[in-house]
Image 1 (cartoon, rainbow, N blue to C red):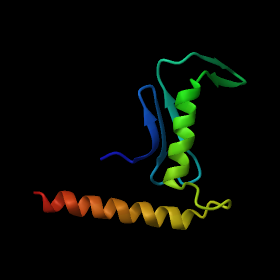
Image 2: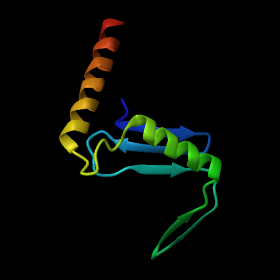
Image 3: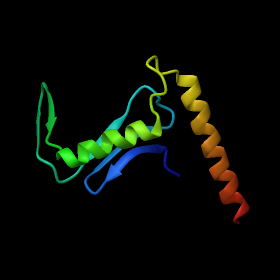
Length: 92
């Protein structure tokens, strides 16, 4: 079972959060231009993909508040995970 919670995903990108890490988000990209150096990384993302990422982020409602209340986010995701696991168990 994956621990990734998708915020937005498209043909060449995946913006997600790890279920037990409510302080970070991760962006995986494929097929885009990028430069990496000791000082940082630069990824060239098409504007259509970026707009989709932002739209999905807002729809998902994360973060819920400016102070990013970790307990609220974790509880919601754990409830969703529990419901999914129960659903899968019922199908057996």
